[in-house]
Length: 220
Image (cartoon, rainbow, N blue to C red; front, side, top):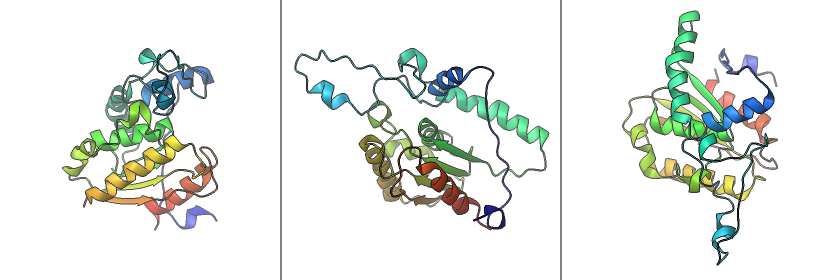
């Protein structure tokens, strides 16, 4: 189905960098993670079950880059860059666009999206967050207290939240847990839809979730 007849006009803004795909992965790991790497919340049970604690776990992303304290934790600086440079540039170059901004994020991008929602809820009014890596550092963002700024915000926000039901347990559990928190908070300023997609994994969920999310956020 052609979305053009069903949703409002939307302008997509992409951010890239000069360099190779490996360079992009390195920058992604830094920009999208809210804190320096400790764990992914996936293998720590195995490590803790070893009485001698001599299991060494090294974690690499899809780009083959090792996650460590030096390569992660730059989300707040990236938010500053978005707010003070990217958004200002777009508004200056395209003054006829309205102020209703959205953010689409998948995986680490979804993690970044929840971090943004919790810390600068006034920045984006529409969020489409898919398969967020919310198990990051023992699911540190999955905490009711992290939504205090959103609860006190005057911004009216729409959030479409999804993942693939065939994803790994860490993704499913952490996203289900944050959804429960959001629902329990009963935030009057948040229009929220949680829609896990059947028979999809971390990558195949994208087309369905983006399609449904755009309809939810921008349907005429």
